Length: 167
Image 1 (cartoon, rainbow, N blue to C red):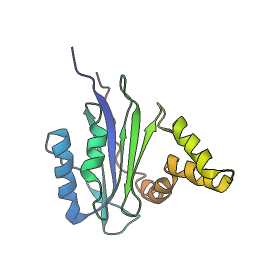
Image 2 (image 1 turned 45 degrees about the vertical axis):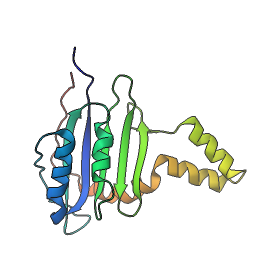
Image 3 (image 1 turned 180 degrees about the horizontal axis):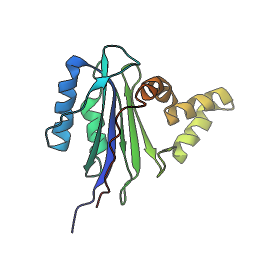
């Protein structure tokens, strides 16, 4: 009987050239194999580089990747992990200014906001819709999406690597 596997993607949206080998080493330490990424210039941030990495591993590999890269100056990245039997999908987004965001995702990649988080937004708002809006915006990771969007668009036309079915 095979162990449960999942798959995901790591998008390094921007990294200074001096950091690129360290990113590869950190990824390799999580996936337990040498990682040589195909770094390309990041047009949204001159002097920075971008790369993508598809991975297959045990559930929780996405969290390990996000943790291994967390907090590095000038590094912007996103990690996605698809759902697997008994485990929800997830996305981690990181920017130097905002730090890290984590959200659970549905099968389409949408952020899922829990009932408790919605209740907290209502309670924190205490009748003020602007506070409720702010709390729900935080729960959805909108600030991270706004900051990363120019880097995502700058990657259009980059080589695409297709994931293979996990068996």
